[in-house]
Length: 189
Image 1 (tube, rainbow, N blue to C red):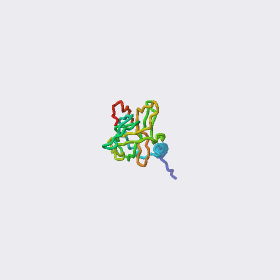
Image 2: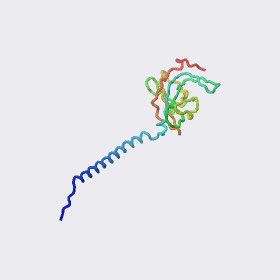
Image 3: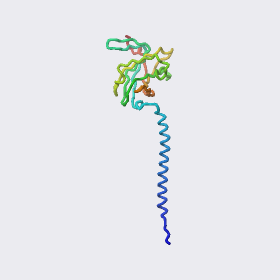
Image 4: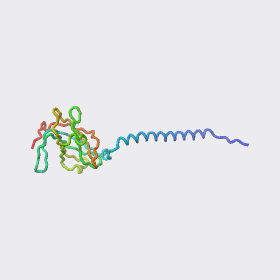
């Protein structure tokens, strides 16, 4: 009887290749489990529009301001924060509204209506319907707040976008510095 000889070198190459493929599949599975879970937690409850719609306040003023209600009517508004202009940067999404997040000189949030429900008296004034604001267009936005607490001066403003369905997106990283409307001689009505 003749003995059959096995080529042990060929067999070890196949086993080695199978082990590498198996370890690669296990590594991808572990990585997917970790990344997938963290990503899902980060975006849960958010609309895709929150990631694509980008609004940027360019400049900000605060104080008593004059607001044009119609081509023939203007009203004087106390305790106003005014963004002039608010620019919609590139990115898709259905914009429904905005929330102004106002900060004091220490960086503390002093007003964030709809995020902080303790500001129910805030009224927004828009130059036009926000749903009509297209990419790279700008709009004037004003908000009337209750009287500021003693010593509080709004120095920065950020914007939180409200998208279709009333979903409030996280606060934008864009910040505008605020100046007193009186210091730049904004006329009252």
